[in-house]
Length: 527
Image (cartoon, rainbow, N blue to C red; front, top):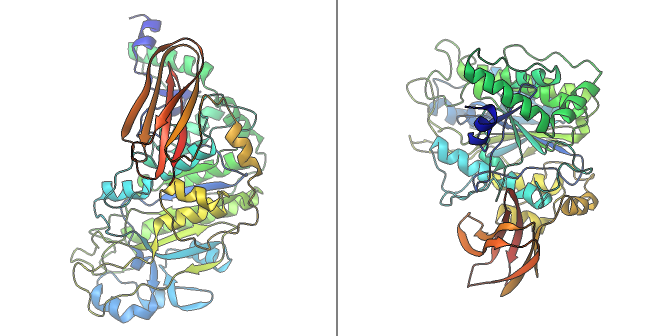
């Protein structure tokens, strides 16, 4: 097969594009893929996923319920005299492996949110993770991620016309082989999935990952050369990396999360406008501690202690590093896990799938302290008893969107598909909506509708370059409602009327497709 024929026959939507060796998965159009881009200021959000379901009761330990815990989980409970103290409280402390978190909390750079969950929790890893990443109700399946909906709102014209002077950089980055559903949007995926930290080093040093010495390897080398010529972001990533002349701090060894966060810190310090970074502890191990959560001789050691130590050391070093690099005021991070663990331990020195658990928000701009109270525990917990939810996880999302990314509260409700309680987590003094207006106009606007919001009908206007043109209308769950246009057309600007056929109030999406070009516009039905 000739090389050019090989390229034409290859499934472009799933082939990894390599930027001088940087493995970046390029996903095609799909309602399961998301739009990620920038924010309305220079603020950055770093999401840290604790894969597997973290045991909150052995992470943030309620000392005022220690007698109950002693009866419910005596084989795994941390000795009271080993619990790390926190300034301003005697009723709660941290696992002894979390010394870095203790220092950050006492310095006012770590906020604890007690008992975060949602009504009617699901105890399946896959389904619970999907709920957290999409912002769905337990009985609801969404085809878009919460970040995807936000960033589609912020940059509704992407990818048409990008990069542009207002957003010349990658819109979002995830370090890992698979794109998280948190980046799913109504049309296309706009995040970069970087295989691992080593790929970044290959990129900035111009060293491609070695191809096998086979005919397929020759074709792979050719694909890489084509990709290097066409990818729009290789240069800006390299420039950002090389612009950091200050030596970074030393990160902990044998700590994959630390390796990921070191890369994130340097790219932020290098001036990338990328707004959301996604990292995880998947390579460091799973928090699904059904067995051997603690060692048989010392409950302060074991699998869970090792994971918490890696988390704490990596985040503390990252926070110190961005402070050292002069960008700490731009960055807020948060941890999350798909669920907590049961109150009662099992006979295998572990814990089974549970419900609510604490969540950490960190950074220079967090409001110091805690949100909520220690969990309310029954005096004699049963095998199926769980920690009751104090705060909906979408309240955390809503608070970050409002106070960190400066999204008006009414728009936050549209993005999260409901109105959620606001929490005082981060300082919102830097918020401005001025840049948001620029973001809304960035790129090339190929589809719009008026009026918007609308009640009975709206006029959808679109510009086609000619050829096959399609307009589709989806509801918020991704269900296709109507296809007003699906035909070959002459280049020009057209309009089509869309009638509200007794649809419920809420957010809808009008999707425009013209050959390889596509764009999505949010429409709102109001009463």
